[in-house]
Length: 254
Image (cartoon, rainbow, N blue to C red; front, side, top):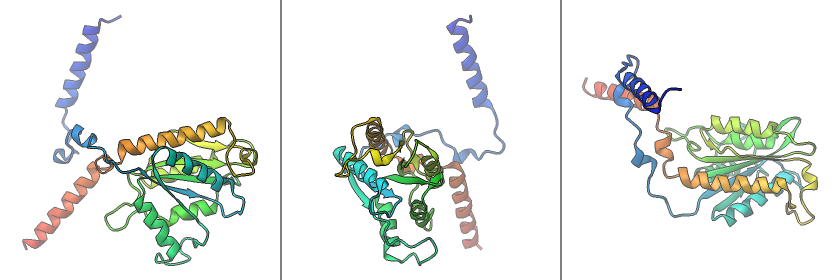
């Protein structure tokens, strides 16, 4: 077994070799070393702002009941929470973006620092109601990406045995929207058995997982919200922006 000193020397040699490597395809000026100060900014003191979306229009909707259970927990954890009611939201491309419900959804998404998406599983997938809401939230508005760097928690309810199809799809969409999706998630099986007559969730391991997810979302939101701009600052985009600026300067000098 090699001694710790020899192991340390071997790793040190590898590091020095890596630092001395040349990177002909890399534009060095656009790749500085990580800025520890930017990663640890002063924490904001306002309540974390969380938006909840749920994917059902039914009068008795277990995804809505779960969404409001999450709302109560998030408020208990010190958050300011708003839930969007999808009733009246047109299908994507069915109406212009100036539609009042579309504007309401987009303004809430922009306001939020984190989001919770709760969908029923229908035919092995998220519902169209859930997907329509996400499709109305733009990837970009001019140079601004409305959801980039926001935190996200995903949950689903099922009428039968436990499944993870809907939360898996929601995770894909969260990545596509450039959101920070937390590791934990909730899937409530046989949801009709998990709520009482008052619409409150009964004590169970499913409820405990919902608590876990809400707690984790709040922690990730507090940890990342003030550093999200730096966390999503990318080499490729810095390089592209510099190239565009250089072209504009050249045009002005003509």
